[in-house]
Length: 123
Image (cartoon, rainbow, N blue to C red; front, side):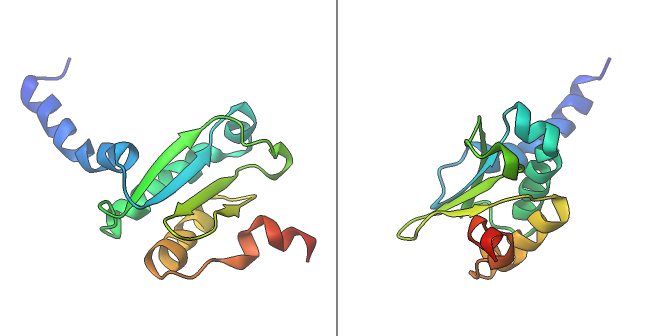
């Protein structure tokens, strides 16, 4: 069993990640975590977004949450990004590496990574 001090230290370390997942920032990253998404690898994608947002110090601007089925199971893992005043962006067939790239280019840099969007599937 952990001591009270060890538990307090764990709580302190995890506080930023909890804030990222429960916040109400202007930008929301929503990861599809239904059975189909989890089976396709959504858990590492969710973790990559949470860790990427924290390490980029975007916690006050970006909230990472999860949802159930988004309805396009064949494209899982699916992530939708909602930004105030902008059209929703839907990223499909993601992995942790692509998620990290999206954090850098889209969330941090402001440029949608077009090749990972649902619109790029037809090309």
